[in-house]
Image 1: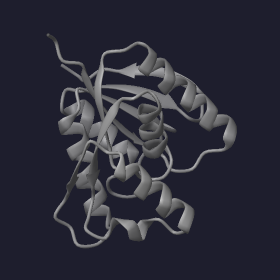
Image 2: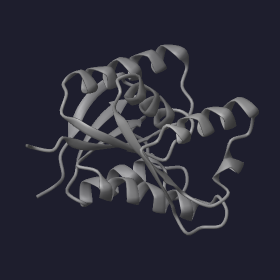
Image 3: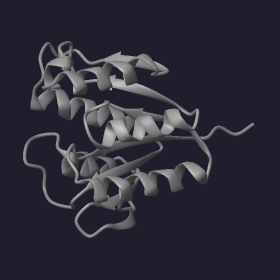
Image 4: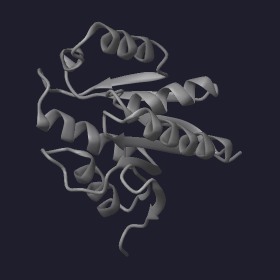
Length: 167
């Protein structure tokens, strides 16, 4: 029996409804093609949570990489906190990294951990460099340098391309 793919997610946190629908449709296509064993996410707002919700809707599991002990502090309102806690409760497993508080270093470490646990990455990304350490651009670069293929859902061009690691 062959194992399915372990698919990680990295991506932006805020999108307008049209772009969110486009991202959802592309992730739904990926799920429909089958072969997913489980997903890997940090359950950040936006792309991470959308990915987890779609996997859960299709009865697929995901594991959660929590960047730090007080990660809940990054969710600024009650709805965001509830979404995080509800998704965390349905996670197959959780791994909390050894950082006390939210920081760029914690988020960068979590992004790298997601990559290392994945066979394939999905990047919901505008294609621009990261604004801070550990942003989506950094995670994509790390994934490619780690030999991982990346499905780039470009939120500016509304295009999907596959990025291959350099050989």
